[in-house]
Length: 180
Image 1: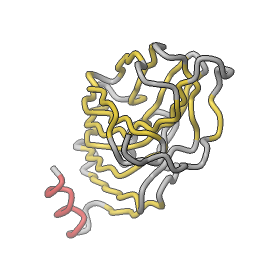
Image 2 (image 1 turned 180 degrees about the horizontal axis):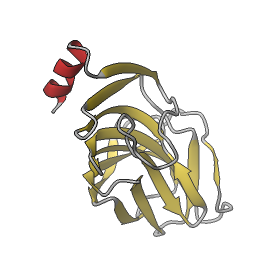
Image 3 (image 1 turned 60 degrees about the horizontal axis):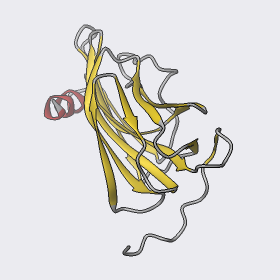
Image 4 (image 1 turned 180 degrees about the vertical axis):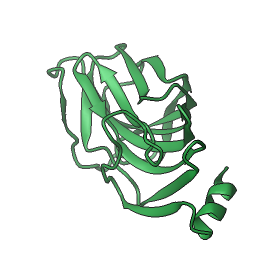
């Protein structure tokens, strides 16, 4: 599919875009012929909309294809405060079907600490992580009407047994990424 989209872009039938890391380009949950569905995290604190990463979308009915690459690493703008063991929902808002993965890392770190298999447009996941700040890097394929493609995004999560349940501004990525 990516090769087809590249050919379409080369011959003027599609468009290519370079996004600044962390740009907010997705609409409020409904994919269009050129936009992917938004990545969302629903918790007891509320719904967090993820920061969009790279994507490719093809709309077969409209004959349009678009790809965009995020420049640089993307980091969450917000974090959802959750309790240890709390069930949360990862969602591709507006998608009719979806699949993919969410890689869980300490906020600002590269080492994978857990993974979540996305099975459908909504996936429930019980947060069984030690207390701390995390980011969920999502990569998913989707279909919505005549549009389909792949998308990526990042969400923030803080596991804390006592902090008020809320969605708030993400702390800056700190150190603490060493071995251990």
